[in-house]
Length: 348
Image 1 (cartoon, helix red, strand yellow):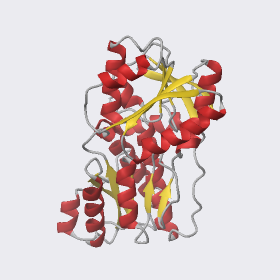
Image 2 (cartoon, helix red, strand yellow):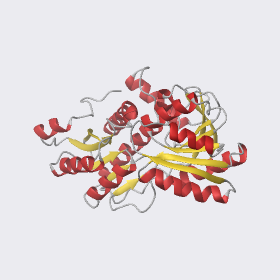
Image 3 (cartoon, one colour):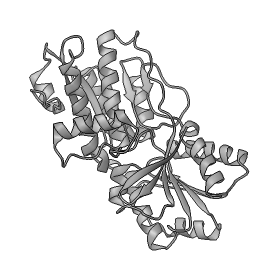
């Protein structure tokens, strides 16, 4: 099912070769470095599949679809400046991506009113700027039902909130405090830490000292996987519930899996098993396997969101942007880690 030519193009090659009358080019902001870089292979594969499928069904206004990657794992101002410079140079007119919300804020400000920017992962909430389409869930919508399920079903009533110190975790913590108070649960500790591997011991000590029975985690990617490993080494994994709004299949592989039954994730999608009732996810995984082979990267939630975002960008380009209604937000979902996979236990 591979298109010809390949849909992924190097931005500097495009600058040299100039515009192609038979192609439309979409910027693809994917974290090729930084904490979320472990998700990049999945994301690039699924974005390329989306571009090929768009081309095979008529493209964008009859033109084939090409994708021009930008590394969104760098500092926010660097990513925003490069994306805007490439747009001004005519490399692409619209942008699709996933990255941390501090990068999202910078890119959104740079792109406001200049073209379509589709941001696909769970986001920090608040108002969206002109031309920015957010297809993920905000903090309350993503976490509220999961918190209620865990308070009710797991009797998790003493919570510690741990995250990275940037806009999305701060918004998650604000929403969680309100939700937990309404459920009669307590927030007994909170900490925000810088990006990058750090000393986990102060965070683990906080969990122990506060006598927490649950932890809400808004660390991401590599940092999240490293924390889970240290959490298990400290012997806390079998007696303290963990809930993450950023844990997906690549992260679960990176931490070595978890069979405790105490690790939960709330993301818009999870890789489906043959017994799953999620027929759309199963069909997407089958198309991906036909394209990329049996050893293809997993169809994680970030990659699934990027796939849908590229399809949306193609539709917007074909209709001029104004007549395409925004997609409905995905329903909140909750899954429990089961070794190296997830088993869904609740949905909104």
